[in-house]
Structure formats: C-alpha cells, structure tokens
Image (cartoon, rainbow over all chains, first blue to last red; front, side, top):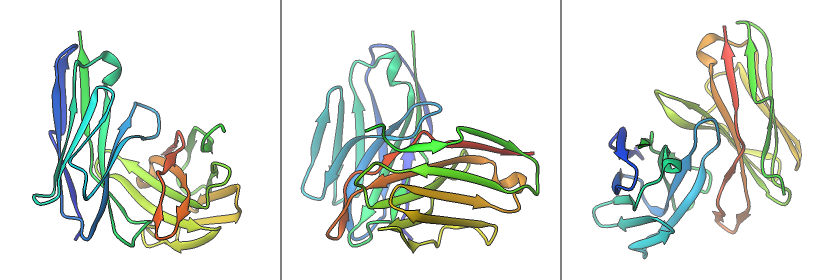
Length: 113
Length: 116
C-alpha cells in the first residue's frame, strides 16, 4: 500500500532558527515528490517538486532533499519567519497514475517570537 | 487568472439536508480533483475528472456523495443526505494533464462544511 509518513507531527521554533521536516514514503514506482505549504484556512500551495534524479532543490529559504534509495525526503527551512507558520505536506505520485497523489498528514509548524 | 474558485467558503447545515459544493477550475486546465481534509485523515482524494469525464471515483466514501462536471469550467460535489461525519474542509484542485503526467495541481481555498 502506498504510504507517506511525516515527522514530526508538530513543531514550535523561535523566529530566526532553522528546522528540518521529514518525509518517508513507500510509493512505487516513484514519479515525483512535492512539498506543499498550507496556511490556516487556505488551500495547499506547492513549494518544490523533485523527480527521481534530483537530490536537492531550493526555493528561497526552503531547501528540499530527496534520497530515492532510502525513500526519504526532507524540507529544511532557514532563518524562519513568522509567516512560515503553516502545515507542510509531503505528496508523492507514482508513475502512470497521474491522479493518485499520496498525501502525508503534514507537519504543523509554529514560529514564535 | 483568479485561480481555482470554490463556493461557498463556509457551509453549516443540518443533518439530512442536501449540500452542494461548487468549483470553477483554472481556465485551460483539463484535470479536476475533489479532496476532503480532516485532522485525523489529512487530505483524501474523492474523485478525479479528466476532460470533464470522471476517471477515478474510488475515493468517494459512499452513495450519498456524487460529483458532476457538466463543462470544463464548472464542477459540483453533492452530499445527500448529509451526516455530521461529513464535516470537513473540501478542496477542489485543477491541473493540466500532458501525456501521462499532470502539471502541478492548484488548489482552491476550500469549503468548510459543518453538519450539525
């Protein structure tokens, strides 16, 4: 069964600090992995997309990594800001199943002063 | 483009009533998805349309749920009769299907449904 597990479930950090969110998946055959940011009361918005051959991809202060061998991905946030407070969702799709996105349940991040 | 537009943003209804959620996808997109999000289960795909045709409805929880896409610019998700356990946020998303893959899915702001 295709599954995506994220950790931690929730995280509180001080503004300016860095943090790393984890995603483990068992989706096969793997096509791509996306990290979404979901602000409270809004729909998810894509941050990065990574394919099998990509190890690292950055989007501003967000850096995603992918290890296709161990089926793990991480999202690193540098110099966190209050506006980073949101849920971060890891989404994996399998080859040939455009409609079948497997979602993690997300990590809820709170950045405080 | 205004993005994916959903209405209403909030809906409170009594158990047993019919509920209709509406979605306008991004112009030019040919794939449309309905998702349900709860704290316990996260985001779950309910149904997927491609070129207005339902391709995968295996996520529709039961016969009380139905979805239609009469044209490329409009879709509805109907619950009849509604039950308290249907309370959730319902998201519509659209994307462009090219070949065997889809481009990024863009989500609407969701409809928060509360059934009392």
